[in-house]
Length: 411
Image (cartoon, rainbow, N blue to C red; front, side, top):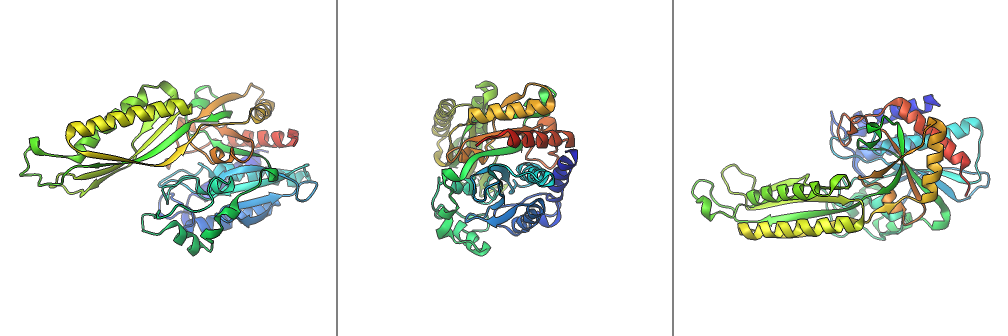
């Protein structure tokens, strides 16, 4: 089974370069872009080699299906996403899809058919790298959205509807991506941990118990642009200095909740962004996550109150837009137990159980069917970075655990 793990790693690395990225020299692949289209064509080829039939759903996600003993039986779905963040790593999302393919490849080699089908899922938009609405594809599959957000554009001014039409999809038929609960037994997402918990105990793989609640804001702070040389310091309404103080307040609140609470400003846009002009407007992202909905909401309220107070003290305006609010998503207890047994079978040790601070398509799928996640160690805890990596031995263990899980699984 090591060969299956090694091939999954090799293919992830292949997809991180050349025609599979929008940016030469680094990895950036967004939903419905040219590199995304080339990636789906390659992954579909690998799926078909492994014995899966393939199709594109109404949201532009790739679905592979390996029939069970009875054609048309409900499916156990395994997979993740194929898009990436800008300047991202080779394994975030992609490894989960490759492990699903290798799982089916192993079943085909053995001549094994199960009482249920296996579907391998390659979701198109988990990261929200093109449009400010992540998990469009998995939310459409779960029936959480029936139409595309109106007026949302990418960095080039292309609307989501235009992007879908250019790709050959019909925006009016997005709801056809939705699946019925009786079609799926469960959704399992193998994924790199993207953090240090597994490595901190010298583990290889772990079982996720829940995914933290998260909220994303877009904050706009409005001051007054003016001449940098002639405007006295006491008369300025500098939006950027106000935002600098706000960012420190965000960090302070993020630190106050211990290891299960984080808050991040990751993007700042300054207008007019000129060296000799006082910044008159600043827009920034605000990402807030906590173990429970209540803890997240308390942090959000405290941060917003502080930011309003800073704005008032500095004489600038502030507005908030909230493009995303995701509740905490608990993994199905039965799946946690079954995955834990499978991990113990291949490692000989009790399975480590971890909370996911990162968001995943599994957060949407929990509204459709029971959901579980298997984490693979991230060396150095590094992710969303070109140096993101995995160990082949860990991936091989994850493959063996998934194989043990599906063989023991009973619908």
